[in-house]
Length: 324
Image (cartoon, rainbow, N blue to C red; front, side, top):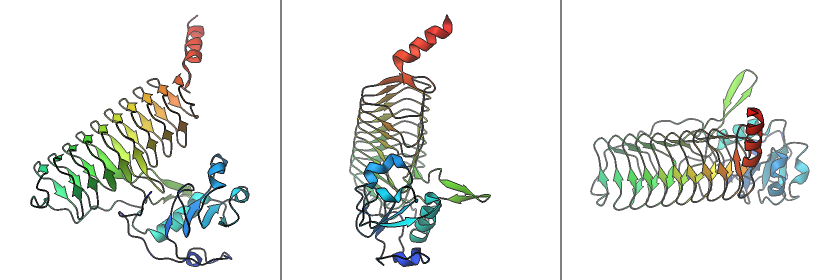
């Protein structure tokens, strides 16, 4: 996740974020990032033993974690021990990025200045925000909205009725009608009878030669980024939640849904109406049958099907036994 160009950050020192904690250092917070990306003067979080190996080598200056997990963090990383990591992370993120908990409409939108975009073709009623970059030979269809700071590469085809925000899009990308890309994800924390909104400070990265069919939704990342790899194809009505990262050359059929923070390798094929639970790791060359429910990690080269998804041979054996 590169420096944040989509949300304004407040300059806050660490002791102002945790006034009741005794801290060794009082640095100015540079950013909030996941364990594997955080560096000096940045905050991260660690709330699951699943990420132990990453936590052991994090370069973050401070980590929000629990009493049971703090022992896995490097000595040089300051620990903030709390009962509810996500609640504390949401509180801190809100203080540093006060506008990231909601999607306020971009009031800088205007009809594009065609002298600025000489080699771009626009349909009717297109609106463009400040600092939008659109590469040559790209086409933006009617009634589409490209919000501030979005970048679109060369030779892209953006259909009609599309909204794109908080996104960086590569070259030769096709996005068909009705897609919504870069909106806030489904992030909240139910606590004491309230739903605490979790700010989403990440973005969407769509790499070269991707095709996204009609009416897909791709949420921006919460603390990490949401990424669609090179030459990946999404069918109609696919939903991709925050922080999902999809590899290259993947084929995803209609109405597939991804919960947050799952990661797919390269050359993954997923049949229609399958569901992928959150925080899973799907290997390379995996095939997932239509209508399957994936609730655990899948190794490279596996073929799975069913709910819950199991190796194909096991699924067929159970089906045969059930029909006897």
